[in-house]
Amino acid sequence: MDKKLDYNNKKDLSIYFILRALVIIVMIRQIFIGNWNNVFLCIFTLILFLIPIVIDRKFNISLPNTLETIILLFIFSAEILGEINEFYIHFEHWDTILHTLNGFLCAAIGFSTIDILNRKEVFHTKMSPIFVALVAFCFSMTVGVMWEFFEYGMDSIFRTDMQKDDIIASISTVNLEPNGKNIPVVINDIEKTIIQSKDKDGNLIQTVIEGGYLDIGLSDTMKDLIVNFVGAVAFSIIGLLYIKNKEDYKFAEQFIPVMKKSKNNDI
Picture 1 (cartoon, rainbow, N blue to C red):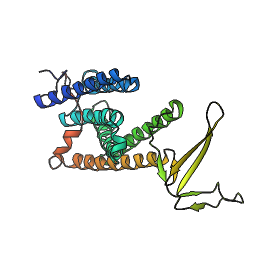
Picture 2: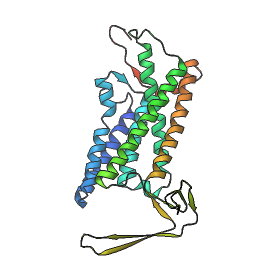
Picture 3: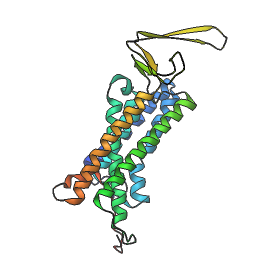
Picture 4: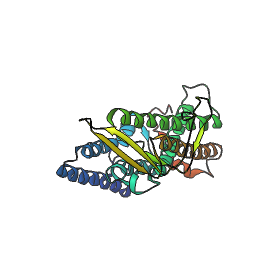
């Protein structure tokens, strides 16, 4: 079967259709219960599932079967399991695992992009292996930062909680320094925080947060960037070793997209 629709073997083709079928089943259920936000997420997931096909057809780039499968599983894990089935809440390290994997995958994509350009005859300057690895790392971190911008924007504009707030038991801030000096005041073992607000009718509302205060996304954002950094460094090192010795690190090819050979063999 042509690569336009499948992934060269029955196993990959099965994953392709099974994941899409599961998303459709979830979407139908969300329609019945009237959760239209989750219906949108399901539609968005189905659109994201088209990424490998678009890359293959429009950019003439072949994705290794392993990478293609991981991308599909990553999208499914983030949107369907993470958001709709609330794995982000029920499994403490779910978000950490996905952001680490994201850093690894984005570094692989950045690496392959530079490697593809490096092989083209139109480019007269050949980049050194360490420079290719560095660009792959920077590409991955840039994608990670842009995603955090997106999360912050969604939380600020649409009042979502993509950044996933944390309850923190200690703070260090100069805002509580009584004389207004640049001296941090440290408060440890915070037992609870009381928030007073008003509803639309002007009635007083008191919200109690047990165990500390509510950190609005900062800890989650920094943790995401740190694990993205770990994933990016991991693949950048693998990519560097692969360029220098492809026979010993041949497994890296399972994560590196390649440009298809043109008919006139100009690549």
